[in-house]
Length: 199
Image (cartoon, rainbow, N blue to C red):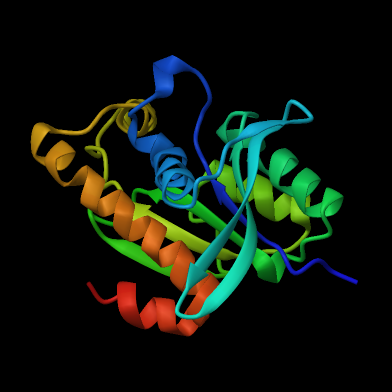
């Protein structure tokens, strides 16, 4: 019997050189949730920082695990599938929070399934879980300049920091991302889409 736990995984790259970069939006959002629900994270098999919490919202109490994979973005699936298998959490109870270059900074899109959109972390999770039926909170980081060095531009962009203007809005944006993950779990995907996707 599958567990009644949910798993929320915020994606990013471990190590101080990646802290505060666009690609680590998922980590930052996980930190907001950890603080909000007093979750302390510790090592899970060297693959992730993992903690357990209970969110109590709208009269519901839901048990969840919060994970920050330590595998680097391209191998995120190893961590997510290990936790999912170990605690018997089905894909329908997994929420992945990640940066998304196809959305402007500050925009949030909630979805389940669909293409990875070139995001290596999502490709890795699709592969490792053998399904894309989990929910995703996509946090917009905007796009790098196109041009002859498009790939390098993209890498430098996602591993770059935020503008001063964006930094001012970042806390509120991350709080919205955390709200979106909670809404999926408490009210369901379509309610979360209604609330966040149109903004």
